[in-house]
Length: 117
Image (tube, rainbow, N blue to C red; front, side):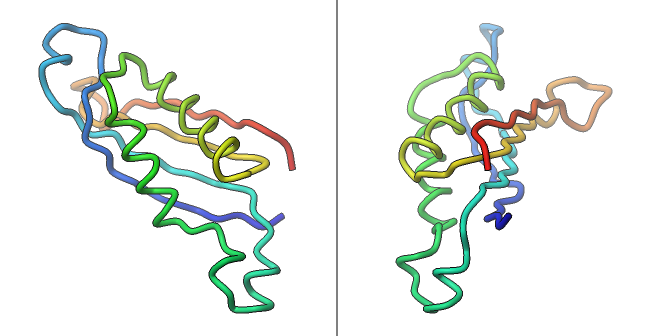
């Protein structure tokens, strides 16, 4: 199986359940593994057959910063749904990390897998 990867996509947004969190921007870090058949792009050296990581990244930044969100679980599900619906990704692993959320941890996060190979 081929994959397209995006690592540590940083998104600054309003995220959290506490009132003080709803008044500030915080950083999320996103890791993505997306199933994608890279053979057509490789065989033709044609961008039209590739899953464009810049387009994906820009879309996800727009999606996650559109409105305040309370849970990183919601962020993960939104990302998976967007990738599958808008980019025709058949399987995705999404990791959403929230640095600094717990003082004694570097980051906390969630990981989901959706779809099939």
